[in-house]
Length: 120
Image (cartoon, rainbow, N blue to C red; front, side):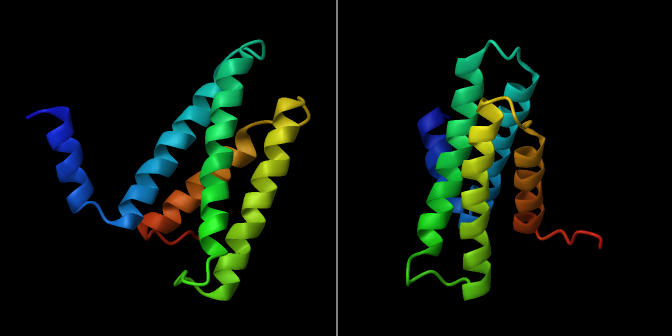
């Protein structure tokens, strides 16, 4: 089976929630990798941070849409998190913060998308 056929089949059988989970996994792996490279490897660090920012920006844009089915409170929280990701990413690039908060946030989103309840 060709890669294209597999991709088409996966797209047809994967729910939007599953696709979001998979995308968060890919972005989070990129952040984990970027956090482990030498600080001089600016390209790897910027690529991972930019990919994460674009993911969160897309979520915020979708949450701003009147057709979004999420509740207003949840939409507002996601938009706020997107703003945090943007600010924190800039701080990481300036060497003022680490990747860990971004990684943890993405992992929490993945838990929510997978339906796991986080212990209080």
